[in-house]
Length: 345
Ligand code: AMP
Ligand code: TRP
Image 1 (tube, helix red, strand yellow):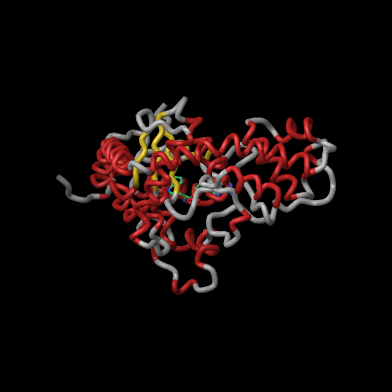
Image 2 (cartoon, helix red, strand yellow; image 1 turned 30 degrees about the vertical axis):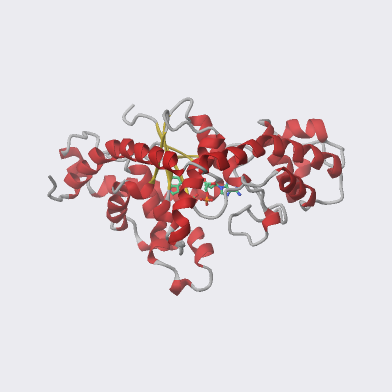
């Protein structure tokens, strides 16, 4: 195999982490560390593409780090670090700014959503965000990228950038000793399970998001048992009992979402959940869901608080992870500079 399998993923240190982040990304990240070499990054450079209060940013970085450790990520086995400590990300992103085409970025739906109507006033960083994301992965020649469904388009762009770099510099790549002319792998998105897209508890057609103004729309990892139970009770539903077949969920986005959340928390499929709860009223199902959510999430919230009480230990974990990340990225960057034609020492 030309490229050893290497997992890379990242999460922004903004807002509070919620059930969508946990089930859509964290659970997969943690699972993959059993079988793969994994690099997990707190993407602080991405965070500042929209304004972040400097007084709050460092704690937000620590909190995401703590959340991962609390959820089961092992910082000895996997590499856990924050992006800005490894300069390869910004360096490679610049080179990719010169590889990617304006036309490619113009198609990115997340930019359109995040920039909103006032596009003229969005930061240049927000526009170039996907190039930095490609650099994150490819600085390590990452091959597998576990993410939620919303990141699919960005991953496609990362593949296009890898391909164009390989094509543009083919001669130099071969001269550098890569006989097949391939320097970067095509990173593969890993988007799986009933939780790839968790929806808002208030509107089953919109994704659960940090930026939703309604706190009732999401379950935060920092919510206590009462808050979790209350949000599940208040979750929007329809008057029908649960269907007994998965096909019955299709026209019912809110029911589909709650069944998907239950399945993901319990580690089964939607079909298995319907086997147990099909034909029952939401009042019964919501009680079970609230209980399950509290059992799974409340200990994580408590562990985050415990870890946050000792910021020096978190900073030491990030420093150690950054050093290990640098050791992988630096030789890659040396070759990239050689290939592009820069003089380096
Ligand atoms: P973000 O909160 O945008 O930094 O996303 C961090 C990770 O969580 C990414 O892999 C997202 O795809 C994932 N994610 C965010 N929101 C959801 C959601 N509602 N459902 C599933 N995955 C999500
Ligand atoms: N854009 C991703 C998100 O908002 C975060 C991210 C940044 C990422 N760099 C990455 C995810 C590299 C996977 C790989 O969720």
